Length: 404
Image (cartoon, rainbow, N blue to C red; front, side, top):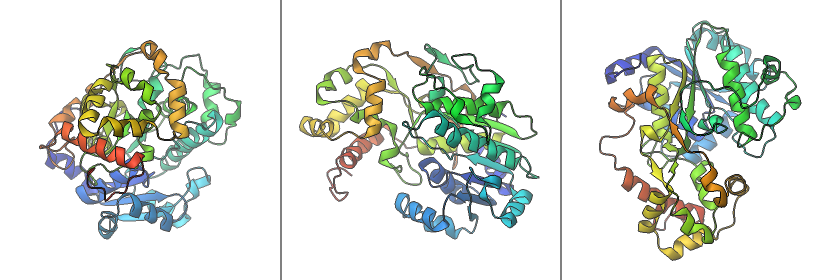
């Protein structure tokens, strides 16, 4: 169903839902865990922990310290250890049998988003493991929905214009034999990187999309392509999200002081969406049984250009502080962004319009999964975020009350 859904209707969907959530210690996974446990009447959540449960809890204590105890105190969350790269997902046989009888939906947010990883390794981490997960849960008795997160960047090889919510053919002809190298156990070292993709990571994600949508199964498959994910609007708390995992922060640091004037005149949208909006979009599509491909991009929130972002930044921090920010040492990720998108060539970069029509109905949704709070002020949110970003990127003490 793709139409307006009353809050009481989508909330009821979760009363009997038993969700297997992977990547739960990541930014998006943690936000989904919060919503499934505290904002919805979810019957049960299996949170897959890679490594030890204790290690996962310590990560949550760092990323959402005021919320994790409340989440675990609901009694709805079962923390299980496993590894998507291992046979049987590395699950305890007794736990696996229990899940086989209980799980009704799977949300896979697990990923290695490294931009420096070689293609063979990115395929292993982002394609083969996801297919292994799908194959495993296909044997579970009650699984009806499988949601896989991809990336809007898988379409970056296109020449511009409208990006539709569908699977696109790769930039070069790929036969099914090549794609089979993305299946679990295959030798991914035989694959060759196509530099029309920005990074091997998105080539691996595009391969995953093709393989998943080719699966013959009674399970409904949904692929969500989010834009760059930014800090939360409100949940688990305002501006939630690790700074080092926010693409905009890396992008900003790829510029130098001498670039400032040029950056301030780039009238191109930066595709970004808050992490809690992405989580709400995902859960609403789960409740409505959406299949195929959907986008979650700025069309569902607010579109900002570099011109607008720099204008807001100048309202929040002084020219000296801006210069200080741009003189900070650059992380390796920032250097990668710089090398891929040089300002001298910015006018040659294709301009895209992102189709989000399959989620348009969600703008009218109210209740715990409303895309944004009724009283939300995007501009005030951006100002708070810029102040916090300035402080975080320079390692300023959080008690510095100039930047709340």
